[in-house]
Length: 330
Ligand SMILES: C[S@@+](CC[C@H](N)C(=O)[O-])C[C@H]1O[C@@H](n2cnc3c(N)ncnc32)[C@H](O)[C@@H]1O
Image: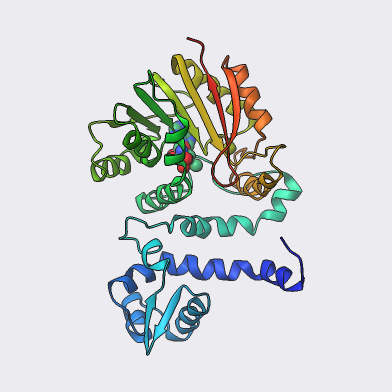
């Protein structure tokens, strides 16, 4: 909340700090320093950078508390030492990669407001021009959903269920949390074909190749696999109302009788005023397009009801997200 002039100034200039960290992540400064603290000269030589702006960047990161300077050597401080070092299992630098490709989009905010038209690539993988960009995108999705997997595992009633499908399940991180928590379940991540290599690599790393598999395709047009549980996480806010309703109906059709469908997203919930933060997310998805918006928990209830699901409940979920759950009649 902005309460005084200093807060206003901090908001006005926040993009500068964001860019500094995002570019340092892009250059892999933190992975490099995790190997060994380094001097300005060493870093500039390794990364082929100009010393004057690089010194300002590194010292700026020190004043933010992200790096420290011991003598003439820079080193990572916590949490950058594990969170921004790409080789660490706790790496969560993905949001900075997203900040990197979203930054030019946000310079088009006024155009969005004036036209109502999206200003960037679509919500599929149109903005991931190559395998490196795709990997960064999937890492970013992981960073955002890291806390969702364990939370979903607690929300799912595993009794009587055998198979879970995560629609738009990326490389399977959420699915893996659920399968770890419920050892009798198997699962499928359904996503675009391009994601398969990242899924295969991740499933192998997690030792889950025998319990989770990948199905490549377009969730609007290709057959969806049957399951007892369907997850739609961080998906619907990318699409317009008609496509949300259509996707929910397709998933509901693929559910086995007695199955459960769970949607989670940063929805606006009239009963929880702090979820109004999600309007910022709404702008972000509207900039990306083709029709992204942030919907309300009531919209979501409506799509589940229209798909014939019953016992629909809205629950508070991680951060400012909501979970909307419905059942298919046995
Ligand atoms: C915002 S990410 C959400 C990932 C994950 N469910 C999570 O909670 O973080 C959306 C996912 O949907 C996938 N996707 C987008 N359009 C798709 C389509 N038409 N068919 C299948 N997957 C699609 C993307 O590749 C991406 O992995």
